[in-house]
Amino acid sequence: MTVEYLGTTPRIRCWTPPGVYRPQTDTGLLGRAMRRERITRRTEVLDLGTGSGALAVEAARRGARVTAVDISWMALAAAWCNALLNGRTVRVRHGDLASAVPGRRFDLVVTNPPYVPAPPGAGPPRGSARAWDAGTDGRLHIDRICAAAPAVLRPEGRLLMVHSHLSGVEETLTRLRATGLRAEVVDRTRLPYGRVLHSRLAWLRERGLAAGATTEELVVIRAEHT
Image (cartoon, rainbow, N blue to C red; front, side, top):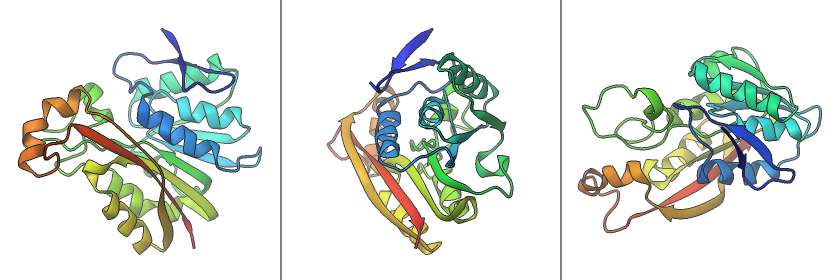
């Protein structure tokens, strides 16, 4: 099925097959931050964990040379098809985060990693859950991206990463700054818990993450070389 995404002008057409993360509020928030960045035909963009490829397509539409990475073959197929649907070219690479592009550096890295805390004992995420489950603290992938960021960014490169307040915004800022990057929150929004978080509400409250609230704050963190 083809759907319209993000309200961009002209709108991006996006096909999302079963098992691939459908563009949602976090995608839109990250897209809004990306549209504030300077992107030209010489800009090389890396989309880590591309999912449907919606952000990769938007970057390509702005003229960038885009590489989209995902560990899911179905996601890469969706990203390739969505680029074709929108008359753009996106390079797709199969692999686990930055290991899929060894030795390469980029002007802009965008990433919407899995960031939802998952109860212990659930085992490795499978199927669609691979797009959101990220260990008991939600940082299974976030910490790896923080560590890898300096090596994949060019000297004036920028990183844009979106994640939930439930997975530790200050921890992410601290880790990025410890690598020598300048990092700050550049956008945020709040929304009601979705199906997955509602199903884990009791566990989140036991951990002191939810308290009485049933709303989630999403943030975009921007980092660059100092």
